[in-house]
Length: 63
Image 1 (cartoon, helix red, strand yellow):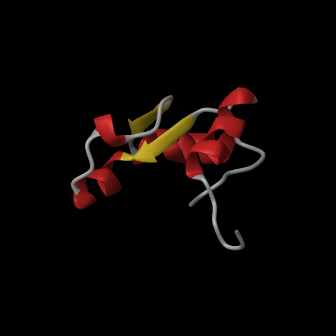
Image 2 (cartoon, rainbow, N blue to C red; image 1 turned 60 degrees about the horizontal axis):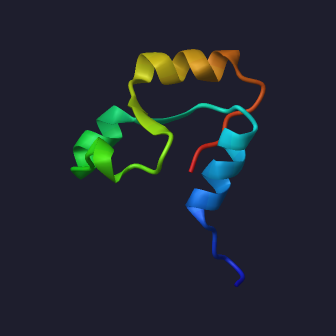
């Protein structure tokens, strides 16, 4: 289906290739999202860590 993306599939590919997946904890808090609602292997993070990852990484995916 055009325009349809399965986030679990996309994250699974990242994980299979050894990528770490962090979710902005501040954004989670603002939206009332608890860690138990995150996909398997995904964890809450904070801006300091996400900034360090962004500076280190060759590629950063944001969605």
